[in-house]
Image (cartoon, rainbow, N blue to C red; front, top):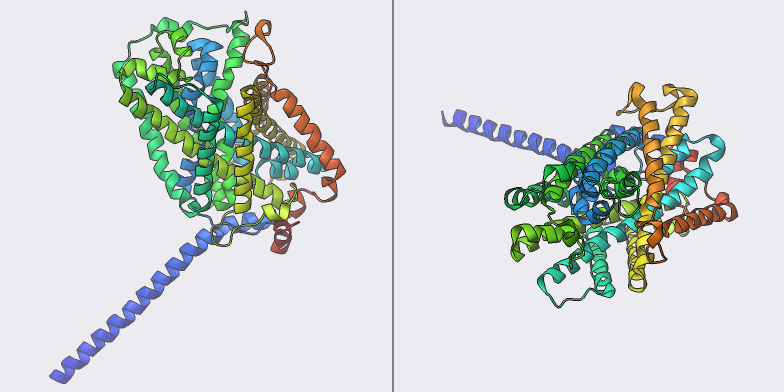
Length: 553
């Protein structure tokens, strides 16, 4: 009896031990599969990287929700609208702001839909310059790709400084609100800008492995902060008559309401710019060919809706427009919040929400800027390309590119100490350069489609189908309009002087001339463009080419 019982007990124990070992093996296999997914991506990611001739060097930490958070926070649309509304209120008025937002929202839907299809075909950190290299006419692939690469690097670098400047001067606005004896000094704002840039450096290096989790958490703040801002305005504010909000335009001194409203369109363009940021994180996103298009389209429409509702609410709550525009804080939205709430703590809290979001927008913009620099350096498009294309073995990010991006942004911010005019011209250059990069890559994609039909393009998980060419054409027309407007001065000619002139057109021309000259003098001997490493249909995978490309001098 006892023997049988002992034998049965031993059998049960042996069976339990075997089951435990089996479950442990399954858990180990699951954990290894998760690690491989983060390290290499799924099979689609591996196939896409092999087709483009790239090797996987960074960890794929971003998934659908976190990359959406990354993209939405970078755009920071409703917050940025509040920060830049003064230009639209002067040029176009409340009605102009509301209607131009709809135009910008629709236009960028066409732009990002076109780019989403390209991202699905070639999900690479290089983004626009890679697409130009792959889809441009053969005789122009290298030079067009090179110029677009330089414009992309310049555009993203200026955006880092721009959003940091926005956040830094909002701190000054709060100081001016709370302390009557505070005097705006340019160097004060510059110090705040540098502090925010250094904060972004810290997040993009030491906390890089947690960046995806932080983006998911800040996305929640982005959405709930929207309601925290609007609900008090809805409840407490006296209403501006609807006739004024929806039908009254301001000509801004141009004596032409239509032209003035078009110039105010820039206020709606800037908050909706940058949904392509997720593309520059492509090699850190799982199932990038599917996830990137989704994140781009969700972010433009989520931010577009919240921004439009914010614009309407803000216009109903403005009150005395002249008094708001002359606010000592420098930001009309801070004055509007204070006028509505009559509370310093409430104004400080609501403004701090906007400040927090702009600060984390700087973090995400620096991430995109550094990845763009890393990718272009990897393809030998920049000096010191071997150094720039190095990925830190422990942190798993291109630390050298992040550090250089930080240094450049700080140097750009110092210009503000000497001349706010020069600084504003340089910062406004960012939108113009990105517009050109969008126009060229969408144009090349449309050209390739027209030349060879849909079969001339690699298969894509996100496809516009029969609507592709019309959408591409709408996108190019819209971008061309915005590109022209971006270089207009903010004030009309009768009062135009060196202080109010928009010098970004001059700087843009100089940058393009310099990039072309540098290419023909030196870079054409070393820069061949990413297309050299892209596999043709039917080619066997050859990752050695990507390895050679990723480590160049």
